[in-house]
Amino acid sequence: MSEVFATTYGYTQEEVEHYIGDRIDALADKNKVDRIEYREKIQKRYNGFRFHEKAPTVYHPVWLGMFIIEGGRFSNFWFSTGSPSFNFKVLKKQNIDFLKLSTTIFLI
Image (cartoon, rainbow, N blue to C red; front, side, top):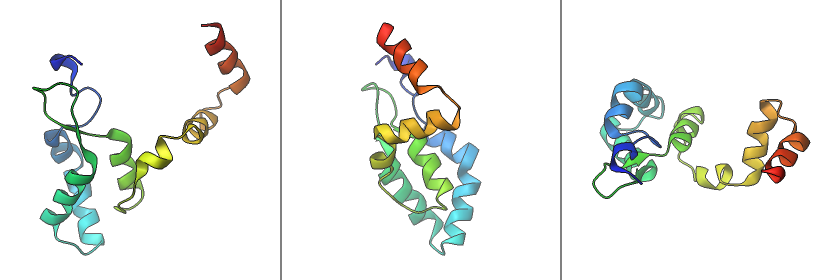
C-alpha cells in the first residue's frame, strides 16, 4: 500500500492507451460501436483499483486481458478468475504437480 508501488498491480490509463489502445479501437470497430463510448465503458468496468490514496486508479490486468481475449465482450471476469478452479486451470496448463505444490504449501 505504498504510493511508490501503487501502480505495480495494474495498468494505468496511460499504459492502456500506449500499449493496447490500437487493440481497443480495433475491437470497437469490430463490434461496430463508438470508440470513445467503448473506451469509457471499459474504463468504468475494469479500471478503479487504487492501492494508495494519492495514486491513480489502475485497470485489473487479468480482467482487461480476458476482455481482449474474449473479443471485447463485457463480462464479470471476477467471477471466473476469482475462483479456485481458475487458479487450478492456470497451474494445470503450466504442468504444475498439484500434490507436490500442496505438500510444499502445507510445509511452509
